[in-house]
Length: 312
Image 1: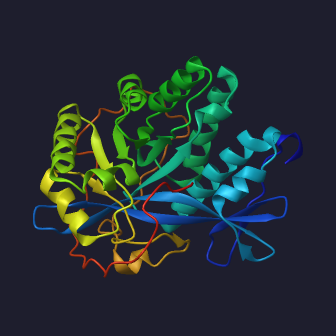
Image 2: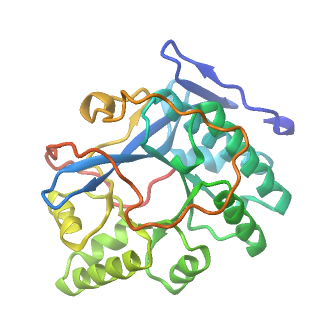
């Protein structure tokens, strides 16, 4: 991406977008995020966006792809992936489902870079027909070497009505400080850390207490990497508001089958115009940040998968 030129996007015959970086073709995959009521019924509330690279038609891991991106291109490629995901979310046409996308603050060196990226995010959201409030910006575990840059990025996103999430929370001192500093709308618990704590009754009791405390602070809690049906039931018992994992639904490259499996209850509503310039105060935090129609969903049989961190 010499000179940080504008990325080039191609559309397939259904209107969905792909892009490229050097020899790599890049596509979006979305994984559903669900809420659950007291009867165990699930509602599809959001998607997490994941990048799916290929080279010469063969899939490669996202970790490998990002490891070979040239340092001078890192910010532009990171931004390009977000743009790809947002455009594809717009093409899905769901009315209220939200989209989780990643931000790595350590990539930004200057305050002006964060301002430019926030403006770009607004423009892309408008082009995709999405309100910024439907986009959740995950601040990844990598800390910025410049705290002022991180503060400026989060403040800019929040002022333009994007939601903020803290990713991979593991209750270390640094994680607790991140929550206090960023005051996120949503907190994603680290999957491997949650698994370890659900192996003992004492650990489960601590998780329950933590969920209650964050909920009282107006923070929505999300458990990811759920592999077993009993983990989903445990989430219901302790009041976890949002859930994600292979036992619920695997990621799918767009266009997905999720509309058939989890129909959009708002599909018949007329679309609302999205303003070009979106400014204003931060969206209020809410422990019940997502609302939707309750759909009965049968949880599929257990699938074996790595219970750990995922990549964008």
